[in-house]
Length: 418
Image (cartoon, rainbow, N blue to C red; front, side, top):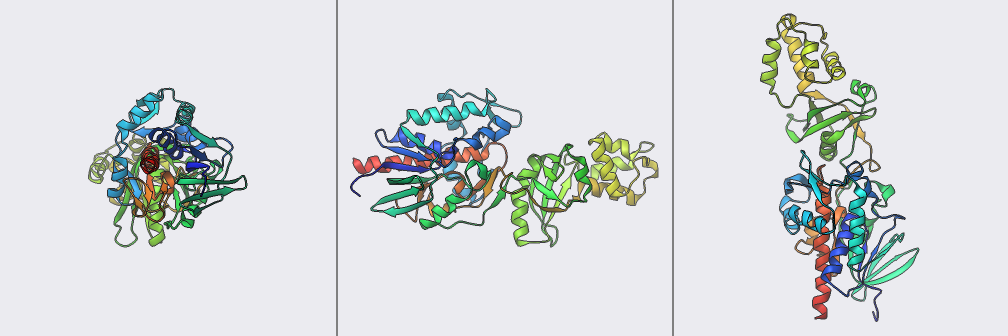
């Protein structure tokens, strides 16, 4: 092609796309970097993250915090831009981060807007041309580059970076269209489903009457055959009018949904007192004496939750330890430490914080996030088959993969010119 509208076209200007643009601009001064996004306002996901505070990353990030592609592949990307790099990067942008007791890192301002504004300023300083709303409807390889087009027109670029996001929070613009663009350029896409999403329970299950009550719990996905544990998540569990939410429910959701795909009889089990062993709890009940089972459990869990669990066990809260039968102790322990919950579904992508599935990392050169299927194409962020647990891990993937894709695209062009 005789002339190019852009040296690097970035499709998607969310967290990963902005990061890719910043580093493409920094690594290739003088290159024309254009970021296209379909949203009328940029950064919607950043602004709502962490309850509007933006959980930028976590103090410890490891491949075990992610699912999807193999851990060794995820490690190669995370190692290129780690948590310390993230802290330095944002400090340089004027956004100091603070650690909370959970290990999560937030801006000291407690405002997601400060994170987004800093990224937008950095992108502009790096020379990135932001064009929005310009939804990309198609991308095709042509004359050693790419033709990117939409109802706004077309743009010819020498390199392209797909940073379109997945399907979560579609009102923000990430509605899965990026997967079709990747497939048009020769990539495959694994099964895609919500992750970090609230779970819905059968409408007559008693926990639904406890909306707003939360407690620390451990959730376990068990196989139908033999009860083999398939995944576990421990943390706050929130009862809602539709089912279960809170960190533990969100973390286990993708594992529950994945398990049910292959095993329709898989179960979700709740342990409401995960810090104690079954033997310790059994001994405590046997030693209860004149104390009532209701007071004992109410001292360890919210009272309404304790009463609901005892109702499920068929045990009178006024029953004293001296009068508890062996069957009643076992029923109580079952309800408290191994409560099966009838999950019937999830709240869908509209309420999911991220997407499970996407383009497998095996289809990329991980040292560059470059496509093995199409020269000059790079991918980063949620479009890849990588999803992290709650706590800033998905943002860390966005920063790391965006950094690798952006620097690699720019360096490939500057080296070609040299």
